[in-house]
Image (spheres, rainbow, N blue to C red):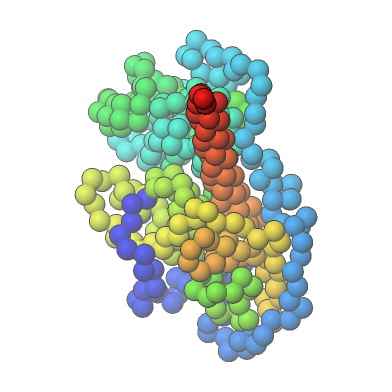
Amino acid sequence: VAANGTNNNSNSNNVQDEADFWEDMGFGVNPSGNANNNTAPTNKTTIQAPSSPSNTSNSSRDTEPVQNEEPLLLDANNLPKRGEYYTARVTKPLLGAIFSSGQELRNTLYSSASDQIVDAIGDRPVVSFTIDGSAADTAGIQLGHVLIKVNGEEVMSTDDAVKMVGKSPRPLKMEMYIPPDVKVVKTEGKYMVKYDSNSTEAPSTCTEWKPKYVVAGDMLGKPHMLYMYRSKAEYDIAVKEAQIPGKVLSVKVKQFDIRGARILDETGQVRYPGKGTWYYFTVVRSFGLPIKISATRQEDLTPVYDGIMAFLERESKRRMDAAAERRERYTASYSAETYY
């Protein structure tokens, strides 16, 4: 999402909203109002990589791109075979969904898909965002589904999708496609974060954490950015407003560039009095302060952890491929020289 500014510390934050946010996340009542929670954490330990989010049953290993050695078989629509087709019927004027091309979702929703599948989908419109309770939601249209036709007319791009969905008469018949062997990865969630200190360890008091809705590789923004909103509702507002040309976002968002970053080989856990165990991992950036992201359950860290790792792994592969290409060019140039 294109955002204006990076300052997210508003003095006008609603205290009740923040308290509800803490409670919804499972951290209990906002500790900022409880002086008894300002004591140092106890039993502070660090656990090794085997216990990290990447090694749980929902690990990033489950979402790594699958490398198919055999050629991908396509159906009559030039889409991967074994995919499912269905027709959604929409009667309301507002669909309540946003489309992005398959290529744009390579590092986010489609990070588990093979390059062959993403390339086959290409620039076709893929559902990248839906509003809860919208016409798209109630019609069963889900994230990652590909729009094929609108009222029988083929749709080949996101621009076509926006125009045809907006102007076509209702009821609207939308022919959709679900790609095979693709686990849609929603790389976002509600977390407690710490991004304003040099330490890679958890803060000494729970009041130093800030509640944020974290989005890794925002599908409407840049894949190398980590976005933080006050809540899911404000993220939804930002996504909708970003679709309006020239619209200035009415919500604030914190942004972090994670190019060249690394996630520490170990994840941490910390126990605060009356709060139980919190789990966290640290993103060490090539510039700027480190970012700590925490949750009360280790498995809850998986979505955003996987989103960050998917980008970093692809970035590393691009760098290695570029280096190999440079070496090949150098070798070819050196071999072509003639000596006397």
